[in-house]
Image (cartoon, rainbow, N blue to C red; front, side, top):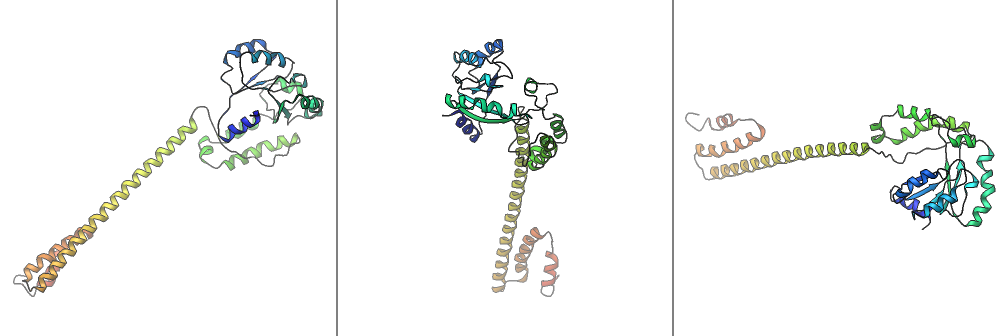
Length: 295
């Protein structure tokens, strides 16, 4: 499988790839990292100066079968012994010497080598001190203050749980003027996802999950209580109906009013359990005052 396809496949699966960048002009560093080259998925080789890439790749081949990609700082670092070439474009470069001329000079050699080429654009950002890339290319980096300003205006929790569009607009507002100075027109900027190394996002998710579970438990308990109340009321209504049926039967049999009143009192008591109003005596007095001695 081509290396670019491996990268695209990993992205489609939301699977992270670990890449190690090795400077071929630092032999001691190359030797120090060799025992650990089984850990990364891929290896980038390149530096801002020098031309020791081929020698470095030969050394790495002795210790690893991981794909080796050229991350060249100049055309002298090209070698077909690598597995792929990152065909770089420094987007905030200001001179043709950096933007296009190296590509023209090396294009035929790259084509004839048959090496896999992967187009790659990158932007140099200020690191509070001059980098070797800045010195070698005379590129003006994007001020880091823009990034700090964006972060200072952003609440992390709101960023994760809120609307990513607002953060995208904030980035556009701060970065667009600097890119315009470099001749780059930034028309859209979309945030796809956030990640962190310390598990903060996961912790926020756990907190949110627990909150949802708590609310769901409360809602379930409340619903269960309401069902229990409704069931109890239904039972009381059934009991009241049975008492009224018994009253109707007693009246049909011309039973004494005092006996009939027992059924009416029972029905009234059941209804009172539902309504909270106890009017048994008033009801009985109204009905039986002209029938029963003492009433």
